[in-house]
Amino acid sequence: MLLWSRWRGLNTVQVSSIMDTITNALQAVRQRIKQAAEVAGRQPDSVQLLAVSKTFGADAVRATYAAGQQAFGENYLQEALDKQAQLQDLPLQWHFIGPIQSNKTRPIAQHFDWVHSVEREKIAQRLNEARDVHVPPLNVLVQVNVSGEASKSGVEPDAALALARQIQAMPRLRLRGLMAIPAPTDSETEQRAAFRQLKNLFEQGRAEGLDWDTLSMGMSHDLEAAIAEGATMVRVGTAIFGARNYGEKTA
Image (cartoon, rainbow, N blue to C red; front, side):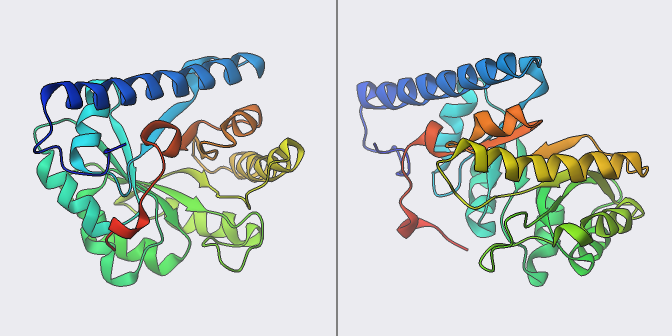
């Protein structure tokens, strides 16, 4: 597919074919969410879909919006800012879901509606200080390293609630919940165990007075297991846009 490329030079039939592909893929993902929610005894609208558009161009985002999707997740700051500039005419909701470097907190705070990947008080404080007082507070999730992988970002589970309490006290941030990216596995039992760990932490925080409502967990390959364990937001890219070409990404 040509979803990561600019559409200039494509004829009407080619563009229509790409848009049909995205529309059909988006509908298929929404159907998976609906079925998984029903199996879990939940309402389908209790699970929000975040379309992860990293490495795909503004045209692919525009086509996905035309198919009914408004919330998009990005990992790479400059790539996201470029897309946002090209899509200013659309009422999109932007989520930053990648690792956060200290020197990038200001543009993230200024250009995104949500941040899923806060793992340190220092980063939260910088986001809080950089958020414009004339716009709503930045929605923030604490990223938890539930699998203990050295290569993965995220705070240790034992330290997650303390960080959440620090964030909840910051006036320009709105604590919304937890996010995790468990170690990949094809075992549904292992998938559910990792998601259950995050759900238990979420419920513990709620019992201790944390005011939050969001569990961001589950991706293209494991969204059913995540929904079964209580996900309120799933982050799906490949199942909507196709395989990624990481050679074209920018930091």
